[in-house]
Length: 394
Image 1 (cartoon, one colour):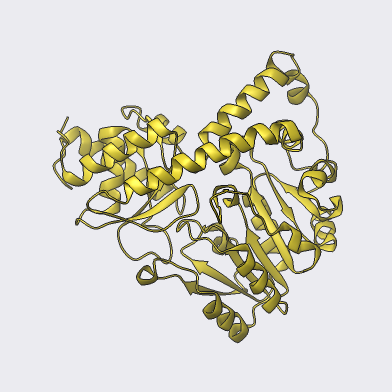
Image 2 (cartoon, helix red, strand yellow):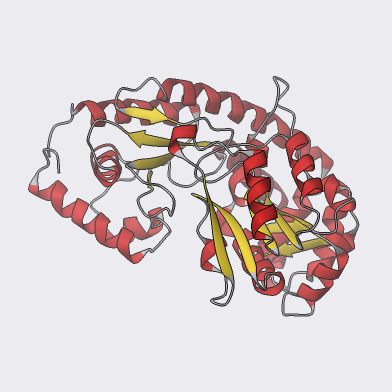
């Protein structure tokens, strides 16, 4: 440890224990606040969400549910079944209801898809979101495609296709943009890849961070959902937690072949959402709301890209290219990732993600999420002070 007081060392030890207990996921700020009440958490740059969208949603909910008293109905009565909510999404996604499967967060959908449609072999890029390999059955072979630091964790399209052609898996997983690297695959390349890999039974494309990606200055939202009309083996998966800042509601959806949706609905997913999740999806299907959301999406993207540019200039921190709302950053001044994370939190109240538990990352890496413009300024100042050793012990 760098210079830390006894009190700070005790807090760091407590953070270490909580991190170990959380396995491959970071402890939530609620858990940290409960277990380590001495810590003042000011900014959660570990969780990946658009805070401007959270503000928009809570205002909508206040007007629709709280002021009207309709919140009681949402809480008291049972929500609609899976396909009823799928029908709500059909218009805004421009796909038939029968191709839509909604879930209690994307993690439930990941588990459902892998448990029901992966039988023999799966290829997964690493580093990646851990449930993709944690949910794989013991009798399924996992082949990892290592994204390398030397290549800025860039996804090599042709190299990947050669690997899939050699291994002949029944399932492949792609996250676009990838978590935790932020790497993005252009939509043209996605279609090329899906077309080349038509022999793979199940291609999972996770677009949970797609609202943060862009391919030109218009920052227009692009998605591979239209490809599901042409390719029966393609599954598009989407968490709503990140772009709309509503992780507490647990809402996600997938677009896939009608037969796959029917299989899942016959295996226990008929009635899996809460009333608040249904309220959100009804809002998501409203054109007026989406117009308001688009304005805060663009505002957040502009603040985020400015933040990344500033963060990349901090000495002792190597920031890798990202088209998501977070960056993967390598600590290069000799400090460990845990040291950086704990000092940011203990001394500055800024919570970032220590990536030591990420399979496929060899080195001292942290993931830093973008927040509001003011919060990003505070994160930037805290990172500079931590890496330059400017803080005083308390």
